[in-house]
Image (cartoon, rainbow, N blue to C red; front, side, top):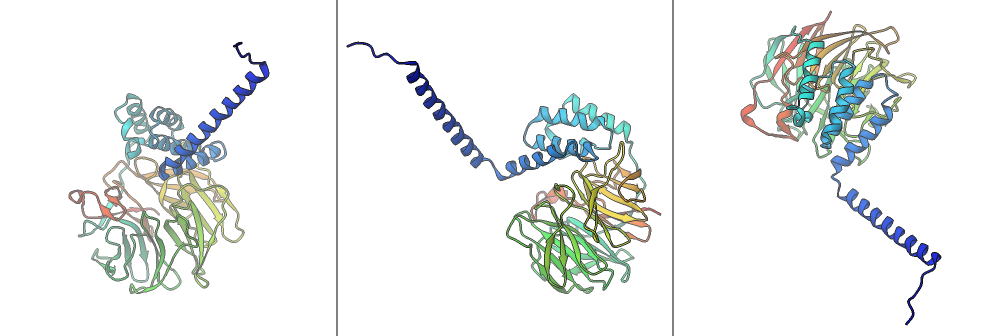
Length: 415
């Protein structure tokens, strides 16, 4: 039998079929791998893609680089994380990776140690705060702090106990909303309405459940409001406007909502750029301007016009990573626990409210900023939670009860 010969056309046809078979196999494999990828990793990749697009478009390049470095570390891309971190630290903005749990795998490397040593030279420790109050309960794990000038009391929210306590001027701590009263979720941000003294707060647990809560000034629940849709949400911090409406950050959805108290409707607020885990929020004294903090910086929003723009921190400064954010006499005061080692800083704003003209670090690498979250003003004194112990909480469960300690509230004078 004669040997079968193949033409060039037949050869190309077979190879083309083989090529398409390989492509199909690769596509199926990629689809299968994507389907197996944990939701957390997929979300991290999506956030990294947003940050990469903003790298040269935001005034704070260091904040974007720091976010990318922490994301790379989460992905176990340790070499990439180190190289990105080097770029961030070269800008000398105040990021301190020593206090960043995400970088645990890098801490023994010489490169990491050199970066930490340099930032500590550039930004020495600062201690100015003093102790104001201490709670007797160790397992509150607080997140929010608010002050009511009419009653001269502070309100402290508890994530673990799922309640709100009040602290008198003498430091006496009592329940404002007890744990067993309304079956609350972990309570986070909390603010007092200047109109009627009622108390607004957010509640959120990691499984996605979240609510906006409203209490009268005796702790009676007036209303509880769920998110506007069934998507992933996590209400975090909030401000109460002069008209009684509320603006709040939704960390899980990466959004800001305006809540109309008359219609009970949440409206998504459009901002000048995409947000990454918005957290702290501040209301200027005019009542017409809100500042929103996320992992990349702070955005100024004019509530009347709807116009928003990024705050420029200037050279060697960052306004990123603010858990708590406040406006006081033309300045922003930030509890920055998202920049590695936490600090309390004051940012003097220019007349346009969009440029930082001076940055002053008030507390850094001291016993008063173990893990601070939020604070509240009483006159010119800024009170803040110095040891929230959030790192000892998983959802609403304490990881190690032996590490719990009384909650300490510190204060700084900011004229």
